[in-house]
Image 1 (cartoon, one colour):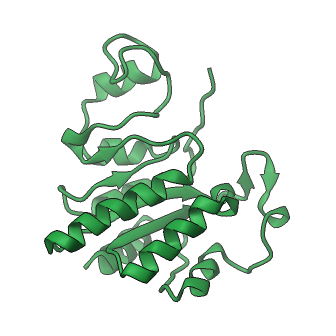
Image 2 (spheres, rainbow, N blue to C red):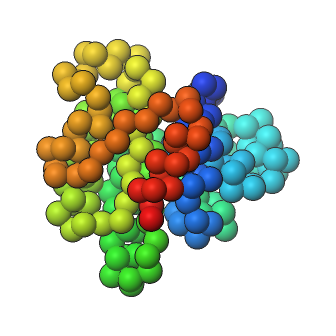
Image 3 (cartoon, one colour):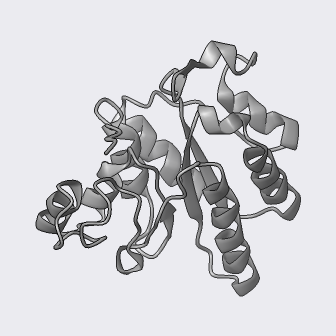
Length: 187
């Protein structure tokens, strides 16, 4: 079975999850182990999950982090990444309609920004003014395709400008910058 490591990308997960309130939902990817640990999921069960054991969250059916746990405010990922952005926008719409003052946050990768679902979610969020944060983890590759072969803009955050959205580029290796940026945007 495949293992998608988040080694070297921990600051993004940990900084983002730490900046949100406990009751704000996070839509993770397969590389966001830091979210699970920040949300204080039991380490024994996380290790069992990774090892494919029955005591893991998926009871041995998966060796990765393709699961969620609503008790911890984590919504399970959708394997092809782009669709969870629309789900996060839907949760944000519910927050807005209920006037709850909460945000939702969805992670996605640079490769997923080439999918139509990415653009649909950004457009919906922008038009309806939804309280949602989209975090693009740009590690230079969309699966095996170099980023430079996928888009021509300088930074992926530039794509938000086309929807009239505010965007920020943050050094994903600087946990304090990630935390402070997400905290400020979530307020």
